[in-house]
Amino acid sequence: MEISVVDYHTAGEPFRIVASGLPPLEGETVPERRSYAMTTASVDKYRQLLVNEPRGHADMYGGFVVPGDDAGAHLGVLFWHKDGYSTACGHGTIALGTWAVETGLVAAARDGDTDVVIDVPSGRVVARVTCTAGSVQHVAFRNVPSYVVTRDVEVSTRRGVVRADISFGGAFYASVAASSAGLSVTPPDYAELTALGREIKWALNDSPWARHSSDSRLDGIYGTILYDDLDRTATGPHQRNVAVFADGEVDRSPCGSGTSARLALLADSGQLGSDEVLRHDSIIGTTFLGRVVADTEAGVITEVQGSAYRTGTATFTLDPNDPLSTGFTLR
Image 1 (cartoon, rainbow, N blue to C red):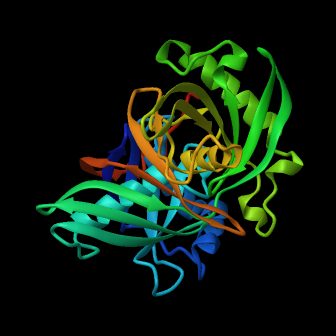
Image 2: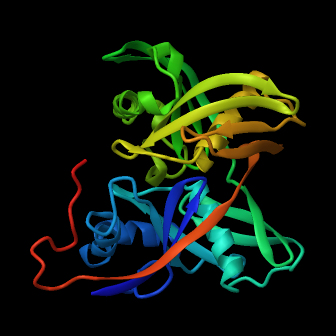
Image 3: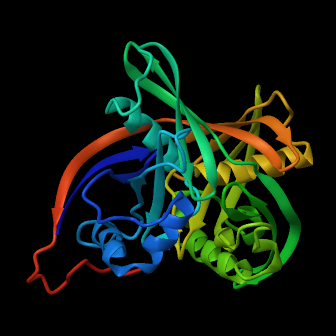
């Protein structure tokens, strides 16, 4: 077993890209291929090999590049993490847009914008890659429609009762003010934020507010967004957040699909005007910029901007005599 990868980070969050070397992935669409990967051991072992220790770690993230649903997309992707496969990933979309242009998969303007169309499990997204003198400067992706599900859901936690707003940004997120649990989104509170986010996610995961209206494959609370309100900037609101997703995995970036979910809430409450930009910081101090570009019956169309950087390439192997096989995780 041998597989080669290209690694990026987007605002500090890793994204491991697998473009070849996989066994056949059955299905006609990205959601069908995701379901196949989730239920087929011979495919899922590649995810396990790349995400588990000693080749990965508990907060590793990545994706399998697959064909798009039709000729309108440049590529498709199956996003994965230590606990399985996600339905959306903004930081991964930004990394894939960068990778597609840097590798020449998508021919790009040397100066200006190039659209990379990507089919993800929650729908079709567009990563607009901006280049200067042939170098990628940043990527702004337009997401599937994002919308508010409900507000002020009481959740009992070990830190007391908190109130969660639930919204969809390609996946369902529960947003909770960190201060309501006596915390702030800073590294010293990292362990407590992780524990609280995990607790809230599982408390709401099977609730009626975490059910997709048309596709049960998108059901469930994907993550909890714990946020701090900061002073507004000249162009709009300024918040800091940490997204705790899957089963206690922590996003180092401001979370792309989570930013879309936050934009839906802020626009709905009037905190984000039609011409305003959200500055969304992460727990490590990196930033995404988000705005609403259209309002549709299905929800708002958001645009989230960030930058991804290549960190390396590797070829991973599995020795058939290795007793640890595809690896392990301690969390």
